[in-house]
Image (cartoon, rainbow, N blue to C red):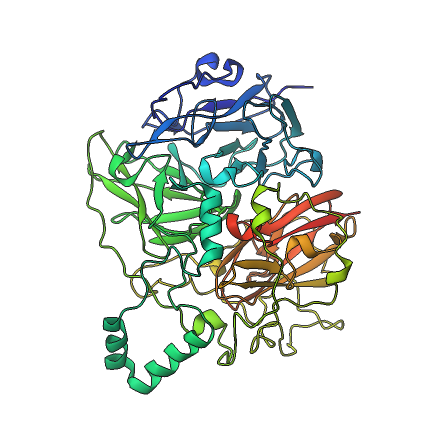
Length: 607
């Protein structure tokens, strides 16, 4: 059996303040390769044909001092890097990755978006025990896909402090697009606070990190635009819900420094190109809590892949990338000039930035910053939500204990006394999951495969995006190159509600946080089903299913796109087709780290 051709390449040239000796077997230096992350010229087009012998890779996880944004910090490191090194695999090989835990606490690595055996997925308490201090765990799995992915810890809140890195898989056959050079762009959010402090602050006060609340000047501006009666009614509605219309992000730039490839905006990480080249940018949102709007003023981007899967080309000026998503775009700069790669946080509290340039030392202007938007009726799914009370729910158990758990350790716990309790029956939201009968329904009352659910808003980019300002990617644009192999219609539908309470900072599925459920969600082996997700909250949620693809039913019929993470907008109803071909237990959760630890987590069991 051939071993995996795996290389690790450092993300940045950040200087280690102390410690940081890497295990050499998987290092770029040991392989005699030029590190793509450290080299601003990136990497030229890679075409992996056939299966070659290659070395195993070794990764060492530590907690050590590094400099971040000019300040001393204590992140989690992998081979001395934070974020971790780039791991490069080849489709058709067998990956062998030895992970040594040099921490004084358990850790793990989850290979986000990869289809692999459940015991290699890296989620402690689900089908893997975790990696104890001082131990080495060897991941072994066949590489059955290609594209842009990433890896991260699934233990506690380690992901917030740099325990993540990019994972690139080169295709065994030529991809359906051409490029001359590539750069990997990993977006993260860094805080100098302890993550458990952040979590406690979120539970202590709704809007703790929101320093962009409405002012009296905003009120009078609305009065001038909409009139006093309409303004007073809207403000009264938000007051009754005990929420702010500017609750866009739970954690903001008031504590976060937004990083691109581990560098702050002032450090201006630079990617080089030669005029006339076509460049592939592999964009990964590896942040804990932050959505980004990405654009390169002066350059058109062509989206060619989403979540590692090729899509038919979509020319855009901007795209929103949810937490845990990846997008591949092509750009073709013709001029001898610099361009700003600008990733603005969705709540407009900050941004990450890099430069695309023909020479080092060049920089381009930072585009004008946009103001924070107010949530309006679009956040309520166009329903009449005037009577909704986001805090009018029965008390849940305190969720502070979730921060120390490995996201799944309570599976099988007996919480039968909680059965029948609906912790998120929000007044006014009762119709969010309903729909009128459609002409596209079959005899069983189900929509035709690929048809968009009533209540979906795939044509909208989301809050804070002006569709008239520039061409922005929306989910409706995503279309697969060819139909996926399983063409069966769904045999059944499974509907889950995304529920929560912003004031008490509790998040859940169907009104029950993870510690309250009595068992897993069951899929039958090899069944074809439709998963319907109804967002009954006023926040966006990136929902991630491990081990299987979700085929987003965005109205593209047989060419609906495959994704591993689905962004669900407030009040939105979406669906995806799933082929349950992966026997075992799998994590299913919101990928906002603090939402997951507050209870928006379930286990899916395929048997």
